[in-house]
Image (cartoon, rainbow, N blue to C red; front, side):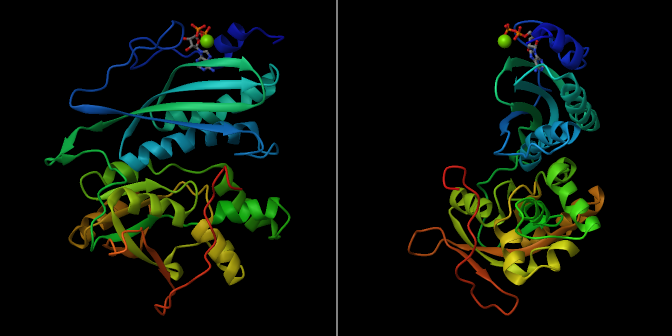
Length: 329
Ligand code: ADP
Ligand code: MG
């Protein structure tokens, strides 16, 4: 690299350590979680052309790279604490780094999450972030962390926010659809600047029976919960909350965006019906809408995971769009 690796690190990444005992600058970072807490750890990688388009502004890319990781912490009900950044750059592009770090640090600061280390190398643009969060080991005798396992027959299924905008934006970028300028700008924001539902995840500790964040599409992500929990579910496709931009599309496009969309970074969670008031209170407290979209059923005798999707009249829908799979699409 023209500008040296160490100069880049010093200029763009090094920040004084705050809670870390040792931040950037030594061979390892040192970090102690609060007493009685698990360290919740997750890693997400973004590759140009695969997870983002080369047209994205660096500042938005910096935001999104951290946001998708914070979303995993949110899904576990963990509070963000620290993160590591491994970055491969084609060249020492300072304009890129300036924008990228501005977007990344703005979101990091908003969540009190400090950069404690990483690695920088030359190569095709790739961003891998590892986040560390804290979650109480137990709450009221049960796991403090929200997990995919835990959904029980009779539980309600909820999602936060609205679903499908990011996929709609992708369809426009691919030239499959067009939107007016204002609508395009709003769905593009949803795709490029997702807001991880960290406060909601924390508010749902001890209330939700299971949770996952929606990254690959609602049906696929819900299936992960059903498999881990050993249960089935019925979902009302028409109940899935969507923006005006999505509701104006043809029914098949709406189904594609809401059921198999991907890149939503909303939370999908389950809760027993007798916790409904607590779910509503959590939603109210953090100012994020949650919508009930279905319920959990006992595992059918066949033993295979069954996710039944119906419309508002209760008619079963067949031939559903598939979720995203990197090795299939
Ligand atoms: P080593 O060779 O021992 O792996 P490096 O020379 O790669 O260490 O990194 C020096 C310091 O800078 C380390 O503390 C490392 O965590 C940090 N660092 C390197 N790249 C990044 C980055 N992209 N973001 C944050 N910290 C980084
Ligand atoms: Mg290194």
